[in-house]
Length: 216
Ligand code: TMP
Image 1: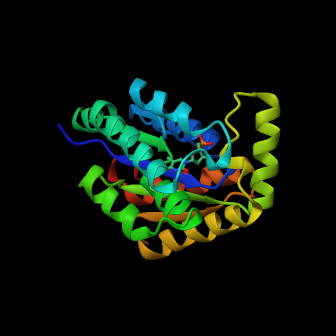
Image 2 (image 1 turned 90 degrees about the horizontal axis):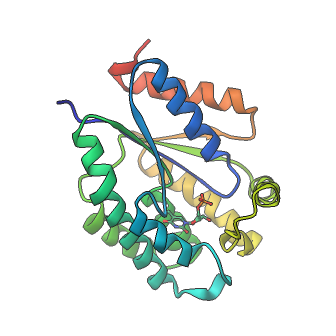
């Protein structure tokens, strides 16, 4: 049995990740590839419980190290209970956020330091690194506008991260670009201000260029 592929989507608030995950799953399905959509923090019942501790409440609810530990606890549950078994069964896994979010949000924007996030990543993620990471890039103000519209339509109260300052969100954007620059083999940056269909066409191009299973 061939191991499945592991693809992650990253970016700031309101970059359109969840829409693009859905579109990619549909495109893969047309090619007869079964892919599982999942997200972080979350993706397993225990990890979803940790998510609810993180996404609501005041921005200073957690000290940055506690937050990084909670995120990595959730990630370990996600990896052990869902991601690794699915990949071993040959299924593809598409995750809306993964370890690069901890590097960007906690390592850079919350100033915990990337040495700390890298050490946690080595411990928790180990060899289960994504085969491809799509970074959706939008200016911080555009993304926050979109996220505010989304919350209005579907108020789940998950606004804790959106309430961090504009400077925080700008740092975040630069952090994702740094991550991409440091690992160009794995990461593809896509301008997510473009129309949704253009963004998904570029994502599909990146996927077909990389994986023989869907090569055109
Ligand atoms: P979402 O809004 O994309 O569902 O993500 C939930 C929030 O969690 C988002 O504001 C970013 C934050 N987050 C981190 O700060 N660090 C992480 O490692 C992950 C996975 C998410």
